[in-house]
Length: 318
Length: 319
Image 1: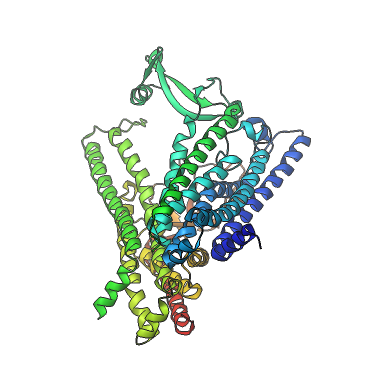
Image 2: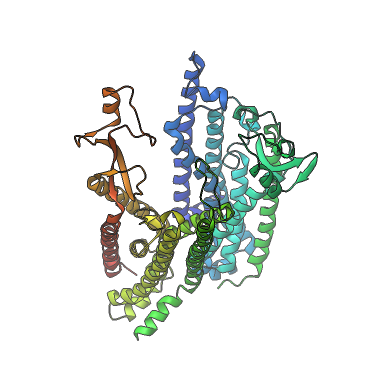
């Protein structure tokens, strides 16, 4: 039996339950996402033959997506699931990797017996991370197919809708959360407390990535002539600022000026109304944002991995 | 002896207890602080209303708009606090219930502990009772704070919130905590491993919540009664549908029947057909307590069943 096969077999024996749970979640999410995608494809194919563009087809002209109220709830749930899945999978697979060995005291035997702790860590970590990457990639591909079918008039690679639920970002996010969870587990050394702390940390990483989302590339002033959602399809609004006579003013001042505007009166202060400027990332910049975020996340993950290696060398096995 | 056992039961899970009780305390204090601030700001607004000149007919302007943004902010924050209260019994029950037996089996200390104790049942009782009591008490504190927060909302002034926020307030939160804790205990004893126990316990909890929700909804639908409601009458309760009552004959008629009888349906200023009164099929808010008791009974039965399974599992399984 080769070392690789033995490592995979050991990973399966030690983390069977977690791997099965993540596999079931990945399978269920992928299946529902693909089922929805096929349903949307069918509706869109029907719309191409339709003479009058009313619902559900009317949405294609107005918003770039069909109005399918029957599947709205399911679509919302599956998209939320796809966004959360890489974080949950990272925590669930990353925590027991080291916490179980430390909690059971088996690290006391395994570490002295291994040629080196680094080699031991590599043989324990690589199979689990590879299994996790395959499962998260399957869900991320299903998410990409869903995005293509939900927004059929635009390429998913030029559309910020569903960012983080599809393609490369979920895979990179899984990697960093997995390593961070393993690090927390090594620090705490017990499964359930480590699961709680790693869950909080994963939430913090997710929040941080959401906040940083619009900062990977410089946004530009949006087109003020946007009348229908399809006019800005694929773009992501990142900021709203207010300008009066060429000078930027605060949100509070803008709010005060808007609140004194009399919709039905003579509007004596109409000239003093600020202009709302929306800063956007155009859809064409989607690949650039994906590459930058993923590069930063992977770099962070590698840094954490290095820290994990150092800590494994120094930590007491008990 | 008893005190030592309780101390041991709690000290075995001190990290989880500290973290989770800290989080529960945060949610409870946040809910109470938000309720207090909401009342203070609303009181300021009411004082402003009392001092304001009489409203001009037809004007939609509020004479006291200063407090509106603060009340809106407090309402948004309250929504987060209510989500915290809602999640408290589930997180506490699973994270504290599962490891009670599972950790002992997983760490192989069960064989020693079980052989040293007078009986396995007594051992289980001394281990589980203090932890489940903590789950119930902490959930109760969060639930009571949730109740105070719901009652502080300006739109419930002088009225009963009825079924509003029923998932995040009152003693029912504690009963849910006991049921989830019991499930965690039973699954942990059956599987004998912590993380798998947590996953399986989560699934069983989701199934239990689905069954209870569907059962209670069915009972409420059956209990819904037609209640005539005037256009400006404030009502509280769970509504399952509406019709109209003919004021002359007392007959109940639907929208469709009215439209078919008179295509040009004339309505009053509130949009109600002339000579008719709106009738809601609803469970009045005054019956909230009755349904809380019914739901509590379902969760308590689940808690007892789960505890029975845990006792049976600990009695028969190999350590």
